[in-house]
Length: 278
Image (cartoon, rainbow, N blue to C red; front, side):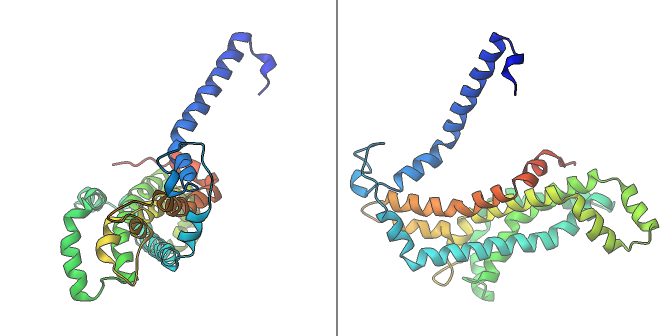
């Protein structure tokens, strides 16, 4: 931006706007900044100091040297990633069907799928716990992936449905005239066209699964433990190890930040287009 083309008043307004944006960014990111700061605080200085303290990496050593936390991180990655993959396999064709085909009670089916997202987890956790105990899915990867995909599937279907509806039907008709089979059209033409939405929806679905707490707490035991549940062990009956909890939280958000940065190009476009239609 060439500031020489602006008047003094316009330059002042631009600078003021930049300062306000910077202050808002600091305000929005302060919880993350504060969590990062206290991860270097000892328990003795947690309540006695604010910004002036003696930094230590003992909290990181204690957390990372415990094999349980590392295993919980891997468990969470397997469960969340598996749930998103299952949701993509099921959700992409379902979104296409809801966008392209007209059938009886179509909107009722779509609303029922969406209602799974807003149903309180605590409402179904007891029946699920009893069912999992009987059929042997309790404390297993398969059981957690199966229930976690109910967190990610509704959002994937509704977001991608909007993308498919934005693609003109004439694109598929033209591909059909060119001799493409329906599955070739779907994979080679439609999927690349919805790629930004697919990336954005997949990332959001992964974040929702990664941060889930209730299902991981009730449907897993000693064999499998998600990272959100593992962080609870730093709360004891007589004290709370805030520094170690902060370390666990800082490490837990790294995959989400890394994924968002890696796919930022598609993420911005994916969140900007393909509005849900109903």
